[in-house]
Image 1 (tube, rainbow, N blue to C red):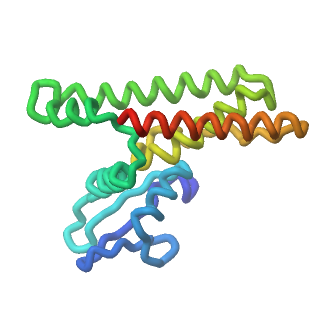
Image 2: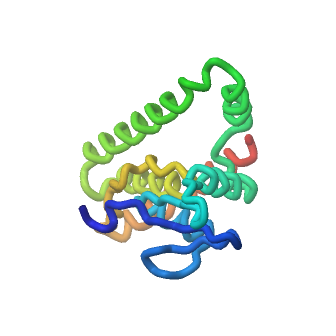
Amino acid sequence: MAESDNPLLIKRYASRRLYNTETSDYVTLDDIAAVIRSGREVQIVDLKSGDDLTRQYLLQIIAEHESRGENMLPVNVLNDLVRSYTSQATSMVPQFLATSFEMLREGQNKMMEQMPENSPMQALMAQQEAFMKAMSGGFSGWTGGTSAPEPEPAKEEEGEDLADIKKQLADLQAKLSKLS
């Protein structure tokens, strides 16, 4: 098994500093989020007790993104999650979320496979995938480690189309943020 197939081991010291065991340096939550966005899994353990702290830190990464205004989780979804911790649905929610993200990933992959090379729609899908990677933070299963290659514009016209698509995507993101 290749080294990148194994989860990156991060150790938390008593001082709460996080240590990357592969690069032998200290890392921040943003560094960990970047590793996850690249498709690599992480495992965060307490050095002294050996407790697995991965879930706690992934939730912290999501909370920091949300607090910076990068709202991906609507308030009604957050309310439903809180309710699910005190209801009979607790056992069903994790499987439902995992299945939903798997279906979303599969649908996205099928659409990318059916797109002709260098089409404006493929460029939009690649932008959407990059956007969702950036917004997903701790959802390690989001891309499944596969991503479509960034399409290269064959003509100047396609480059302009891509710029227009990026602007439209940014406008939609701003509108969605206002609705949240």
